[in-house]
Amino acid sequence: MDRKKRILIVDDEQINLEFFDVMLSKLGFSVHKAENGQEALESIRRIRPDLIILDNIMPKLTGWEVTKIVKSSPEYAEYADIPIIMFSALDDVKDKVEGLELGADDYITKPFNFAEVLARIRAVLRAHDLIKQIENRESRLTISEKAISDVLSIASELKLTLQRVRSSCSEPDTVSALADESAQRLDALEQRIETLKLESEQLRKDAADLAALRKHGSSTKH
Image (tube, rainbow, N blue to C red; front, side, top):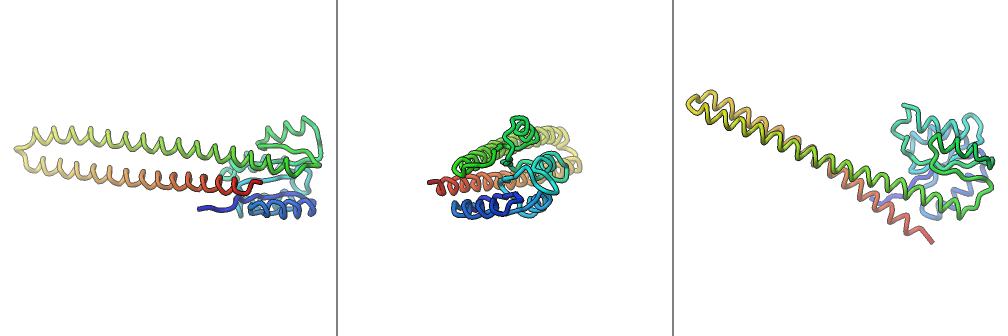
């Protein structure tokens, strides 16, 4: 499904929020706004953005504090992979290093040039999508390996069962019990393969969604 990338803009200056809302909306992004760090954390849970653009100097919670919570807190573990671009009026290497070490993906100093910001936004989103695509492929490989392992394991067990059947062919009750056991193992194998199939289909869908998003992102470029 082709959907717009959701970008959460967090800044206590209303003029910056409105500027990014207008400019990024025109470029095909779905823009969401928050005026402070606490509101940002609530918005992250509610909308699960694809990217967070975060001012550092804010009331209630600073950008550093928000980044640390999102990237390190167990309560936000499911959101920890959301990329963050941090803004700051402080052009200090130490501040930039601290932000990056906390988990920010990029750091931009105010006053900013919008063309540069847009380029960084697209670069961070592309990198994030690439990571997701790699993880998707690794997951699909893992599923294939599990399927092969399960099939080989069940096949080995069935061979042993058949050997026991041959040696017990004069004992109908034993043969019947072994046949039931084999049927149960085949049922278990069938269920396992069906589960793996569903997991693989979901991963394939996720990969298609990523491809659609990349195509949509490319179409918004000038």
